[in-house]
Length: 119
Image (cartoon, rainbow, N blue to C red; front, top):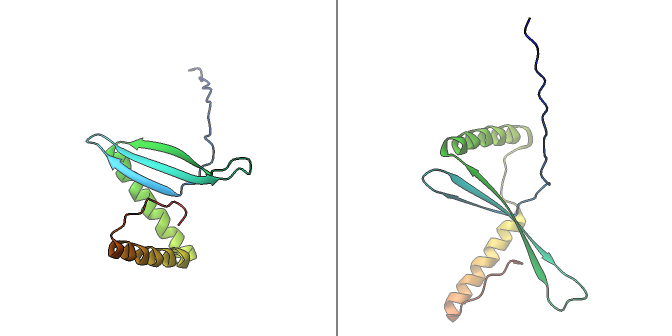
């Protein structure tokens, strides 16, 4: 009778990560998912605010990226059948409308504003 082999497995869980922004790029051999969390840090002892930026980068071969898309679509469909259609929150719609107005005013004044991560 054959002996059963035991396998030791070590699983290293990563830290939980909330992503506010995501970008996806690709090369001929891989897709690069860059999940970012941008958090303002205010310290009463410092005269200036600090912006903390964390990245989690995941790289996948094109086939696996397509499989990921299929799984994500199935999960979203299941979520929407249980909880209703996922829609853009009113607060984001309001922000985008405000942003369009600000861009229009900027174009009329011919001035360029620097990016604002706080709205």
